[in-house]
Length: 317
Image (cartoon, rainbow, N blue to C red; front, side):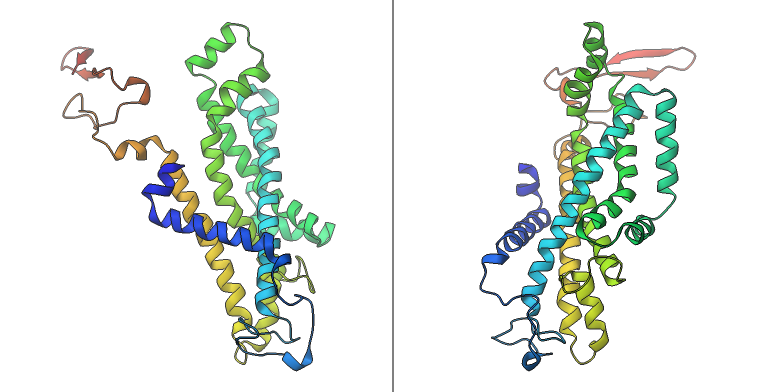
């Protein structure tokens, strides 16, 4: 994580923006702002001014107050969706990747079925059936993201379960839950962490789309989506009604995406090794690759070079 902060300026700026946004969202009840649902005909459609820094809407409600309260709700939905879908998706991926068999095939077919539908369509159907409160919106968006966690976890588990240290744990009689928790999951955290960071903006954007379409959280509760929906009626007369919540969506989604890319680069061994000198190639025809962490300091690189008319010959460089 230190590499994300010190070696990636866009990642640092995005992390700083997210921290400020989270602090404002948590502290918004303590800030001296008007009631986000308070109406006043005298102040309707007022442009940005010292009294209302971001202006007011058609009902005289303060836009700054509503944007910050909507940020609080957007972050709640984003984190809630990732937590819910991450727990269930990871559990399904572990079962499908480690145990295999008919249960693994059943989980794979179910995930394939859900992946065939766009997450927004699944969310719209689920919200229409269950209702449009915060809990049902979280559940509706999670339905489309659980298969992504399951697929990623399964692929990671398949590559880990055959490694030597896992085989050694089986040989000494370790139980399957212990192997999964202490040897498999601890080595599968990095890709799951990156996926969580990248899916938070997906959840935020999906919630905004649902609210914009009138299927998500509705008035008078402020969300970025229903604020844009309300402001489009007077877009020419009062463009600030859609500009500020739209800008909040763009900046938040962009910040989470760039931060996720920075974390992915920091956790990727290939990218980490790119900063140093790569190990010499074993042969001119072979690609140059960096030494794995376990081979650092040995000073010897072993590889294979095919000699014409013979089998592979072990060479030392």
